[in-house]
Each structure stands twice: as structure tokens, then as C-alpha cells.
Amino acid sequence: MTDIPPIRIAHLYISPGHNFFGHHGQPAGDNPMLAQREIVCRAGRGIEGDRFLDFKTDYNGQITFFERETYDQLCAEFDVWDREPSVFRRNVITAGIGLAELYGREFEVQGVRFLGRGECAPCHWMNTAFHPGAEARLQGRGGLRAKILSDGVLRAEV
Image (cartoon, rainbow, N blue to C red):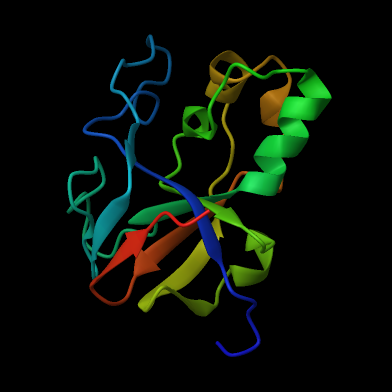
């Protein structure tokens, strides 16, 4: 874990329900992404108040991460300035690290340990939530799905 650069947290979000997950072929839901100053992570369970808390035993997406840098690039590329990073429905918006380097690795953020399980793949809903073409541009950059290995609190800092 020592060769991983510090991970800064730009934004934190939770949602009480699913909008896209499990909605294939149906309209999207309308559950908001709620900005948080801090979130409580529960080892092996998820985030308090989030839709994936206790979703499944050993679930790979107990918490999700997304790069602020990717968000900024998409805003510039599509000239979209009226969407918050919450539209991607990831819990933690990071700054300062390429998340792909965390696939399959243990890492720590603000004293909380995680296991990166792989890409949080973009889906067709990204084209509606952000901009047409977003799903294709996010291939390989959709974020990181992770398991929570230790209890703790994450706080937005950037």
C-alpha cells in the first residue's frame, strides 16, 4: 500500500435507492444523490445510508470511486457545465490518482482500508444522465468498485 500516492476526496455522495441498477428496459428512478461532508464506511457491508449497504454478502461494489480529473475532461470535451459529478452515481469523487492502478489492490484513504475490485463500468444511462456519447468516452474510466475492509469515516477535503 505504500507505493500508492495520497488519494484526496473532492466530493462524497450517498443515495437511498437505485436509479439505473436493476432498471434495464425501464425508466430510470428518481432517487437523489445526496452530497455529504462525511460518510461512514462499514467493513464488508457498505456505506451507512447508501443503497448498497448490506446489498449482498461479499459484494464487490460496497463503495464506488470516480476521478475528478475524468469528470473535468468530460465537461470540457462535451462543453457540459451544468452537471455535477454526482450524475455518475459514484460515492467518492477522488483527486490525484488514476483509479485503474487500484484494481485488485488493497489501499487506504483517510485511515479506511479498501480492496479495489475492478472497473465500475459505465452504462447506457450515462448518455442520458450526462451527455450523449458519455458511455463510450468512459470505457476504461468508469470508476472503481471496491470492498470496504475496515470501519471508518471519510471526509470531503478538496
